[in-house]
Length: 234
View (tube, one colour):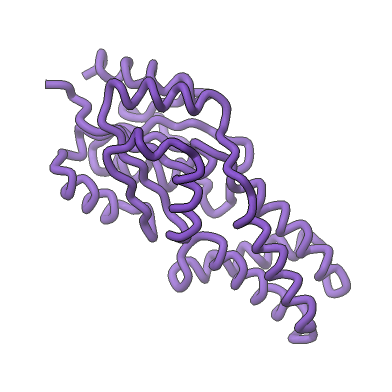
């Protein structure tokens, strides 16, 4: 029996671009708030607000919009106008209108992986937005299951693996976030393959550990090779 019974893939910034659109909106909002403070203060204050709001709002575009509005209210001392709040909402909505832009090698690499392994897509964020991106990507038929979750933590992964009837030690998770895609899986006894992305959210940052069940590749096309390394090492 193969020591790998399930391969899970992250979506945002692993299969397609995502974070770059959030940061572009943040820069535009910083311009709107420039009468009260500079852009670096907007960035740091927004990060603090988002960190506090994750438990309340979760992840995704709607949570981002609410955090931007709260940031504007707090940094302006409540002086921000309804028109400016409306512009923040308009800017945030542009993220929802972005076409799905698959990253290099993804189409061919996912097809190769799906021919060899049962694949599950595990992603977090707004369910409506995530479902729309998944359908637009043209990749959905490669996955045994698509899991859109509120958080990527140990408990969430345990529930997913239990539902699929697999032992965590026989699971590989592939993604760009060390914090969400790699560390929880390794804690459960599974394997992680880290595929870095140039644009990462600060709240997802964590150091990649040196661990025998953690692999690092420089591009998505190299994931298949990393899976073969896992097979030969177990």
